[in-house]
Amino acid sequence: MHICLFSASETVTSRSPDLTPMDFFLWGHLNQQVYAIPPPTLQDLQRRITDACANVSPVMLHRENILHHVQREVQVRVQMCIVADGEKFEHRK
Image (cartoon, rainbow, N blue to C red):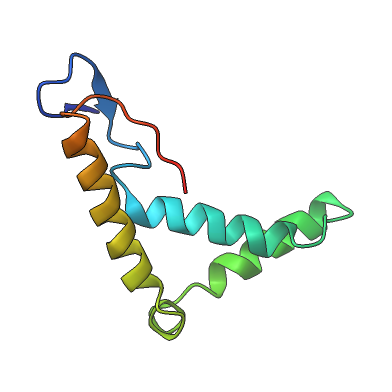
């Protein structure tokens, strides 16, 4: 699935990190949890991924104020998109 943003001449996939704020939070969070210490085996990697996913919950999202950070990040990205007149833009922290 592709969508067109503003008057941009290119289409952007619906899986774009700019369009799915929970994805850009979730993958970064899981990566930090899974690879804090490199897993020594494939089985350990699989267990860590399963455990990290199981620990994501609404309570965790509220406790760590993650939803507020995601909302603020979306606002920043929307403003950057407006400044770029809907064209591609570089997102840097």
